[in-house]
Length: 225
Image 1 (spheres, one colour):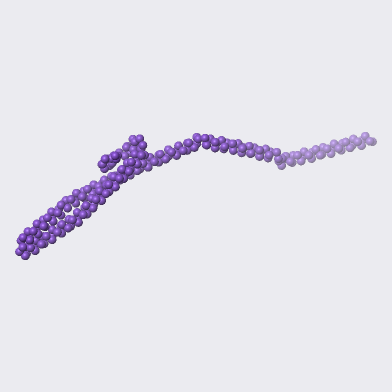
Image 2: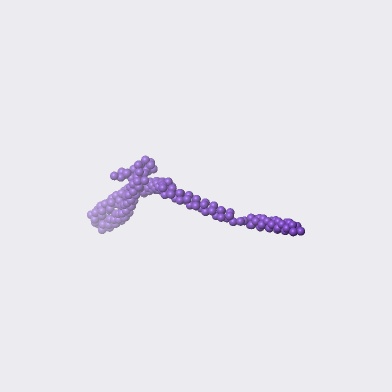
Protein backbone atom coordinates (compact mmCIF):
# COMPACT_ATOMS: atom_id res chain seq x y z
CA UNK A 1 0.00 0.00 0.00
CA UNK A 2 1.38 3.39 -0.95
CA UNK A 3 1.88 6.37 1.29
CA UNK A 4 -0.40 8.49 -0.91
CA UNK A 5 -3.67 7.40 -2.45
CA UNK A 6 -3.73 10.11 -5.12
CA UNK A 7 -1.66 12.88 -6.63
CA UNK A 8 -3.46 15.54 -4.60
CA UNK A 9 -2.30 13.84 -1.37
CA UNK A 10 1.32 14.29 -2.44
CA UNK A 11 0.91 17.89 -3.56
CA UNK A 12 -0.95 18.89 -0.39
CA UNK A 13 1.22 16.92 2.03
CA UNK A 14 3.63 18.39 4.57
CA UNK A 15 6.71 16.34 3.70
CA UNK A 16 8.96 17.68 6.47
CA UNK A 17 6.35 17.08 9.17
CA UNK A 18 5.73 13.51 7.95
CA UNK A 19 9.45 12.68 7.95
CA UNK A 20 10.24 14.39 11.26
CA UNK A 21 7.48 12.48 13.07
CA UNK A 22 8.47 9.08 11.64
CA UNK A 23 10.14 6.37 13.69
CA UNK A 24 12.74 5.92 10.95
CA UNK A 25 12.87 9.29 9.13
CA UNK A 26 15.54 8.31 6.60
CA UNK A 27 13.66 5.16 5.55
CA UNK A 28 10.38 7.06 5.23
CA UNK A 29 12.10 9.75 3.15
CA UNK A 30 13.35 7.07 0.74
CA UNK A 31 9.84 5.59 0.45
CA UNK A 32 8.31 9.02 -0.19
CA UNK A 33 10.90 9.79 -2.85
CA UNK A 34 10.29 6.42 -4.56
CA UNK A 35 6.52 6.91 -4.66
CA UNK A 36 6.90 10.48 -5.89
CA UNK A 37 9.23 9.39 -8.67
CA UNK A 38 6.78 6.65 -9.70
CA UNK A 39 3.92 9.17 -9.65
CA UNK A 40 6.04 11.61 -11.64
CA UNK A 41 6.47 8.99 -14.37
CA UNK A 42 2.69 8.41 -14.41
CA UNK A 43 1.93 12.12 -14.65
CA UNK A 44 4.46 12.60 -17.45
CA UNK A 45 2.97 9.64 -19.28
CA UNK A 46 -0.51 11.11 -18.85
CA UNK A 47 0.70 14.51 -20.10
CA UNK A 48 2.35 12.90 -23.12
CA UNK A 49 -0.87 10.99 -23.86
CA UNK A 50 -2.93 14.18 -23.62
CA UNK A 51 -0.55 15.91 -26.03
CA UNK A 52 -0.71 12.97 -28.45
CA UNK A 53 -4.54 13.05 -28.30
CA UNK A 54 -4.51 16.78 -29.00
CA UNK A 55 -2.26 16.36 -32.05
CA UNK A 56 -4.38 13.50 -33.36
CA UNK A 57 -7.56 15.56 -33.00
CA UNK A 58 -5.90 18.47 -34.78
CA UNK A 59 -5.17 16.17 -37.72
CA UNK A 60 -8.77 14.88 -37.68
CA UNK A 61 -10.17 18.42 -37.57
CA UNK A 62 -8.12 19.28 -40.64
CA UNK A 63 -9.35 16.11 -42.33
CA UNK A 64 -13.06 16.61 -41.58
CA UNK A 65 -12.93 20.34 -42.35
CA UNK A 66 -11.37 19.55 -45.71
CA UNK A 67 -13.93 16.84 -46.29
CA UNK A 68 -16.79 19.26 -45.52
CA UNK A 69 -15.41 21.71 -48.11
CA UNK A 70 -15.11 18.97 -50.69
CA UNK A 71 -18.74 17.87 -50.15
CA UNK A 72 -19.88 21.48 -50.37
CA UNK A 73 -18.11 21.77 -53.74
CA UNK A 74 -19.70 18.50 -54.89
CA UNK A 75 -23.16 19.74 -53.87
CA UNK A 76 -22.68 22.85 -56.01
CA UNK A 77 -21.52 20.72 -58.92
CA UNK A 78 -24.58 18.46 -58.59
CA UNK A 79 -26.90 21.49 -58.61
CA UNK A 80 -25.14 22.83 -61.70
CA UNK A 81 -25.70 19.48 -63.39
CA UNK A 82 -29.33 19.32 -62.34
CA UNK A 83 -28.80 16.45 -59.95
CA UNK A 84 -30.64 17.63 -56.87
CA UNK A 85 -30.60 14.16 -55.38
CA UNK A 86 -26.80 14.08 -55.50
CA UNK A 87 -26.66 17.60 -54.12
CA UNK A 88 -28.85 16.53 -51.21
CA UNK A 89 -26.54 13.56 -50.47
CA UNK A 90 -23.44 15.76 -50.73
CA UNK A 91 -24.91 18.26 -48.29
CA UNK A 92 -25.76 15.45 -45.86
CA UNK A 93 -22.15 14.20 -46.05
CA UNK A 94 -20.94 17.77 -45.56
CA UNK A 95 -23.07 18.07 -42.43
CA UNK A 96 -21.65 14.86 -41.03
CA UNK A 97 -18.06 16.02 -41.69
CA UNK A 98 -18.74 19.37 -40.02
CA UNK A 99 -20.28 17.57 -37.03
CA UNK A 100 -17.22 15.33 -36.68
CA UNK A 101 -14.91 18.35 -36.96
CA UNK A 102 -16.87 20.16 -34.23
CA UNK A 103 -16.75 17.11 -32.00
CA UNK A 104 -12.96 17.04 -32.36
CA UNK A 105 -12.79 20.76 -31.61
CA UNK A 106 -14.79 20.28 -28.41
CA UNK A 107 -12.71 17.25 -27.41
CA UNK A 108 -9.48 19.09 -28.19
CA UNK A 109 -10.46 21.80 -25.72
CA UNK A 110 -10.84 19.13 -23.06
CA UNK A 111 -7.48 17.59 -24.05
CA UNK A 112 -5.75 20.98 -23.87
CA UNK A 113 -7.27 21.56 -20.46
CA UNK A 114 -6.10 18.12 -19.27
CA UNK A 115 -2.60 18.75 -20.65
CA UNK A 116 -2.40 22.11 -18.87
CA UNK A 117 -3.46 20.48 -15.59
CA UNK A 118 -0.86 17.74 -16.04
CA UNK A 119 1.80 20.38 -16.62
CA UNK A 120 0.80 22.18 -13.42
CA UNK A 121 0.82 18.86 -11.56
CA UNK A 122 4.31 18.13 -12.89
CA UNK A 123 5.65 21.44 -11.60
CA UNK A 124 4.08 20.96 -8.16
CA UNK A 125 5.13 17.32 -7.94
CA UNK A 126 8.70 18.13 -8.95
CA UNK A 127 8.83 20.79 -6.22
CA UNK A 128 7.62 18.26 -3.66
CA UNK A 129 10.13 15.70 -4.91
CA UNK A 130 12.96 18.23 -4.62
CA UNK A 131 11.81 19.02 -1.08
CA UNK A 132 11.82 15.33 -0.12
CA UNK A 133 15.27 14.77 -1.65
CA UNK A 134 16.68 17.78 0.18
CA UNK A 135 15.25 16.45 3.45
CA UNK A 136 16.69 13.01 2.74
CA UNK A 137 20.13 14.45 1.97
CA UNK A 138 20.05 16.40 5.24
CA UNK A 139 19.14 13.24 7.17
CA UNK A 140 21.93 11.26 5.50
CA UNK A 141 24.46 13.99 6.30
CA UNK A 142 23.32 14.08 9.93
CA UNK A 143 23.55 10.29 10.22
CA UNK A 144 27.02 10.18 8.64
CA UNK A 145 28.22 12.99 10.93
CA UNK A 146 26.87 11.13 13.97
CA UNK A 147 28.55 7.90 12.85
CA UNK A 148 31.83 9.76 12.36
CA UNK A 149 31.61 11.21 15.89
CA UNK A 150 30.88 7.74 17.29
CA UNK A 151 33.90 6.27 15.48
CA UNK A 152 36.17 9.08 16.69
CA UNK A 153 35.01 8.78 20.29
CA UNK A 154 35.28 4.99 20.19
CA UNK A 155 38.84 5.26 18.93
CA UNK A 156 39.62 7.86 21.58
CA UNK A 157 38.35 5.83 24.51
CA UNK A 158 39.01 2.25 23.53
CA UNK A 159 41.98 0.22 24.85
CA UNK A 160 44.07 0.73 21.75
CA UNK A 161 44.11 4.47 22.33
CA UNK A 162 45.21 3.93 25.93
CA UNK A 163 47.98 1.61 24.79
CA UNK A 164 49.16 4.14 22.23
CA UNK A 165 49.20 6.88 24.85
CA UNK A 166 51.15 4.63 27.23
CA UNK A 167 53.68 3.77 24.53
CA UNK A 168 54.09 7.44 23.75
CA UNK A 169 54.65 8.20 27.44
CA UNK A 170 57.34 5.49 27.67
CA UNK A 171 59.02 6.81 24.57
CA UNK A 172 58.95 10.33 25.97
CA UNK A 173 60.51 9.02 29.21
CA UNK A 174 63.32 7.33 27.26
CA UNK A 175 64.00 10.51 25.32
CA UNK A 176 64.19 12.44 28.60
CA UNK A 177 66.68 9.90 29.98
CA UNK A 178 68.82 10.06 26.83
CA UNK A 179 68.87 13.85 26.91
CA UNK A 180 69.84 13.80 30.62
CA UNK A 181 72.64 11.31 29.91
CA UNK A 182 73.94 13.50 27.08
CA UNK A 183 73.95 16.50 29.41
CA UNK A 184 75.86 14.47 32.03
CA UNK A 185 78.49 13.46 29.49
CA UNK A 186 78.85 17.01 28.30
CA UNK A 187 79.09 18.18 31.92
CA UNK A 188 82.11 15.86 32.59
CA UNK A 189 84.23 17.38 29.85
CA UNK A 190 86.46 20.30 30.99
CA UNK A 191 85.46 23.59 29.57
CA UNK A 192 87.96 26.04 28.07
CA UNK A 193 87.77 28.24 31.17
CA UNK A 194 88.40 25.24 33.40
CA UNK A 195 91.45 24.23 31.37
CA UNK A 196 92.94 27.75 31.67
CA UNK A 197 92.22 27.77 35.42
CA UNK A 198 94.00 24.44 35.83
CA UNK A 199 96.92 25.74 33.76
CA UNK A 200 97.21 28.83 35.94
CA UNK A 201 96.94 26.72 39.08
CA UNK A 202 99.69 24.39 37.86
CA UNK A 203 101.93 27.37 37.08
CA UNK A 204 101.42 28.78 40.59
CA UNK A 205 102.28 25.41 42.12
CA UNK A 206 105.47 25.18 40.01
CA UNK A 207 106.53 28.68 41.14
CA UNK A 208 105.85 27.83 44.75
CA UNK A 209 107.72 24.55 44.36
CA UNK A 210 110.70 26.37 42.83
CA UNK A 211 110.67 28.90 45.68
CA UNK A 212 110.57 26.08 48.23
CA UNK A 213 113.54 24.38 46.58
CA UNK A 214 115.45 27.62 46.54
CA UNK A 215 114.91 28.16 50.28
CA UNK A 216 115.93 24.62 51.02
CA UNK A 217 119.10 25.04 48.95
CA UNK A 218 120.10 28.24 50.85
CA UNK A 219 119.44 26.54 54.16
CA UNK A 220 121.76 23.66 53.22
CA UNK A 221 124.60 26.01 52.23
CA UNK A 222 124.44 27.92 55.55
CA UNK A 223 124.70 24.65 57.46
CA UNK A 224 127.83 23.68 55.60
CA UNK A 225 129.50 27.07 56.28
